[in-house]
Image (tube, helix red, strand yellow):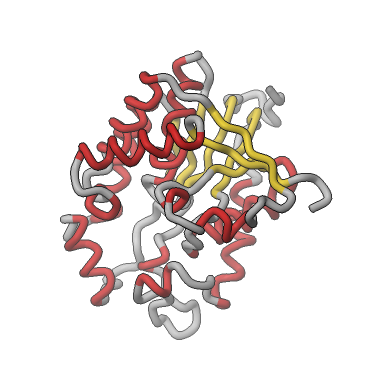
Length: 260
């Protein structure tokens, strides 16, 4: 484990960067539970956890809030869900002030930047490039850690792309990458990022015990507002999560080979 840059700061075995307030539990909940059960300290940093601009609203936001059954103070309620999930996993957490992409506005015109599923799974809007440097600057203030994990960007969500670009700017080759779940289980999504066969990437499976998997499931269930996005009910959640864990040997992390 590396030594802290500041003796007053805690030292973490691992820090997991989550674009949204459910990504760490969905993608890495098992390994987080495994680490904390072994007495290791883990920090989950959710980057896009900030409140939206005052009175921002449009049909796309309304449709998502309706699906989430969070008509008022949606972000605050989602932060509460994340606090509960991190407690289940035994992890510390930080909620950073950047708003989810569905709430972000053009810095000049004030127009919404992302107004559909096609938008949020498309390319990052050119007006958001300065955001990469802002996030990278905040990332550099994090406590020292044995390992830092960022999304592999499977699924091509704009917030995942921004966080990982910023993490690469801040930490370079020191990064490891986790598989963005549940996008990772969708055919062709992983290969779109790393190639088939993988080009310049090495994977490491993280074996999970039954206790690890159960903690992951309970943490995902803490995100009540988000379950309907990916799962029909608890049985479907368990089937999908356990099925993917069996396929890949638990959870899987990736490292970019130096020089590639």
